[in-house]
Image (cartoon, rainbow, N blue to C red; front, side, top):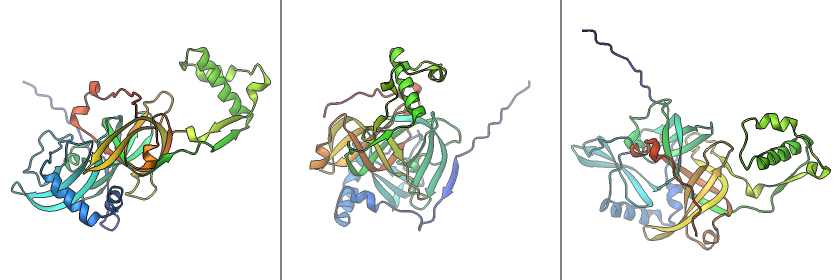
Length: 328
């Protein structure tokens, strides 16, 4: 009998380790939710223990016997808490941070992990199928840290907390006067309109052959920057998850976080041709200004972007979330 073995070299994504001095911590993230961290945060951590769950992420065998335990809550906005364990019992507190559950996501590969081993904080550098680079804080790093594989596509759920969020400036416009840029813009719109709203496969060839029929078609084009989708990640190592974005609100709902009223905005922050839209559920404290934001408004925000990778979401049948406009 001949037995054939197939060797498979499974590698983890590149890991960059931060020192304690390089790790920013979560003080600014707790300040999104309270002005009295010294009183509120310990109270919230104690309260969550009473109803804590144990998220598994990619790890179907998560257990209290593990060296580190990740605790969470079954709430739209909740706390994740990391404890060091010994003989199945908590030995010491490691970390805690506030999270938002995000129903929307993209299929991405993990290009690298920027990690603090002492706090179990990790920022993932992700590349989506269409090539977009996204940095996000890993909500489930404690559970998933030994399971990530290089070049493996994962469906990643995205969410965020808003440091600031407001309606975009509708008066911010630019005037495009370059004739070739104007010709491309007019040609693209005309060709797609003539094709029942679909982009034909030979769009570039058709654009090359397109010619204006009137002088008005080559008039300068005004672009409203307040109606633009954009995402810019941070430029400090280990803090790339602190991002600026602009996009359109497609859903709005209310919830609470430890009795604090929260508004959840579903915002499209990237919307590129022939690519799945990048939609993020953003949590913000309910105030007069956030209440004034309506579905279909364009907003701009400074956010703390988060990611979560769950085993049950890796089935292709479960990875597409229908994007629908929800009434405010």
